[in-house]
Every structure is written in C-alpha cells, then in structure tokens.
Length: 240
Image (cartoon, rainbow, N blue to C red; front, side):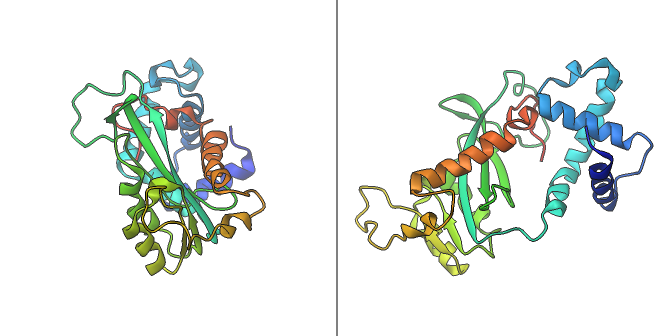
C-alpha cells in the first residue's frame, strides 16, 4: 500500500517512537492501514494478510501505548495556522462496538442517533488537521472546544459556527492572541456588530460563514471518511 519512498520516511518515524524494527513491520503497518481504509471487522481481513488476531493484537498494543497519537504529532511539521476552522462530526457506532465490559473508559455515548462518537477537529487553510480529539457523541462542541483551542497557540484567526458561540471561549481565543470569527445566535443581546465578517472571505475557498463551516465538514468527508475503520466505531473502544 505504501511506495518504497513513503515507507522509508514512515519507518524512520516509527522507529523513533520505539517500535521494534521487525522483518514484518511493513506488512503489519500495511495490514492495519488496509483495515482502517476498508472498515471491515478484524476477523474479515483477507487470508493473505495472515492471522487476523496477530494484526489486531499489534494494533491494540500500539493504541494502548498511544503510538498512533505520537505518530500524528510527529508528522505535523510547521503547520500553517493563520486560518483555523473548528467543527465536530458525529460518527455512528456499529452495533458490535458496545455492550461488552471494558476496563478503560470508552468514547461511545448515547445521543439522538443512538450510540455515537464525535470527532472534534481543527483544520488549517489546506484542510490538514493539526489537533483533533474524540469524545462520546453526546458531548457538545462548545464543551470540548476549550481543550481544542488551547492547542492552537499560533493561530491568528479561529473560525467556527454558532455552536461555539460562548463568551468564555471567545475570551480564551483573544487571550491566546487570536481573533475569534464566531457569529452569535439570533437571540443574543450583544449582537454581531463587532463580527469580522471579512476574515473568512479573505481566503480563496470561502465567501461566507456557512461556506467556511462546510469547508471543515468537507475536509472530514473527503479526506478522512475514506478511512472507514477510523470513522465508524467497529470495536469496543476506538483507538487513541
């Protein structure tokens, strides 16, 4: 699944995380990526990949050790955070993803759609996600936003929809030296007179606030929903 050039670059990062350089390392990583790309249950991995349980155990071990999160962090090099858009996306949990006992807390919650997980993501102007977090589907966007915004210390403009329109969040963004471009709700007594509507229009891909919000969702849909195994909860606890 990887070209030799890309694998050599990825292998260097993996080894820096303390992952042992086994002869089968490339095959193991490609099998994990295949499963995340297709979204099939572990037991349904093709027989050509070998024992599915071996691939699952390696994936689970790396997940518990937070190897994947460290990998994401190592792959972020000089992110362009001048314009940052934040939003959340509900992920429907598979019927087999809950019900069993588990020692650690899961990120599957009850919402109107049933068992769901929510991905809170910030993307830059290029659609790349410097930080993201995963919670239960019942967690409101505005509740998780302070932790997400705290990771955007170098952002100049943070753009979001009305779901993030709390005054404490605006104060946090200003304290970090950024400009909040978040419209207030229609029943707000403050109004939107101070709203910098021109901020999202300065980018080449957005003319209105609605289009700016759609940009975030399109990045999630087009770039990341192709990895169905990561965006459809098929196991008891999603990977960290």
